[in-house]
Length: 281
Image (cartoon, rainbow, N blue to C red; front, side, top):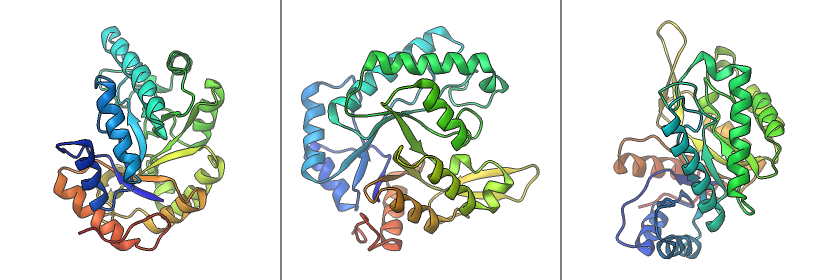
């Protein structure tokens, strides 16, 4: 695996950005610029990443193209198309987003998220994004979610089939699928199912942890890697079996210092594992 992080490290230049990432043991990163940046800057960051062997794992298109607010939906659609074009230009592993929510909260839980008509429109919207962006080198990938499609590997496979594009791939976030007792208590069995069914389609992965809170009703809370009950070792094993070069990205930490601590911890814990550097200073 290639350990990385979804954190936009502030730097004075593309080379300094790459140097700082490399010093932390980062071997995969989300792209620090968006489609509004000029091509000269975009190409400079891409070159720096190549020079320092930092894979661009994903370009984020985080938005809700299915928003009930037409203006927000149109803006999200444009962002998805342009970010996918950017991902293709720089040869990123994927452009990542959610499938879309049926309410005001862009990534929210709504009953309508699973309505057949809503699903059909979401498939059409995804097809339109891919057709308009016309990627040739990268993939458009939907993040798994606990309360919107896809909530499991079978739903993901159906979504890929229904979209019907060879440029559709899997962006895997196992913790987002830890939304039921059987998945939490039988994690290895569920991971075996996920990696077997999605084999050959996974292009990028998130890396985080979770805590099952001892409160009614069933409540799962995200946690930094190593601070919860996620079977990290088995997950790393499955990622490496899938592809030793897969990017594994930590995310949702509150500060630069927290990302640095997490990178050091993971690098130390998995030093010697395929694609993982030693402990960063």
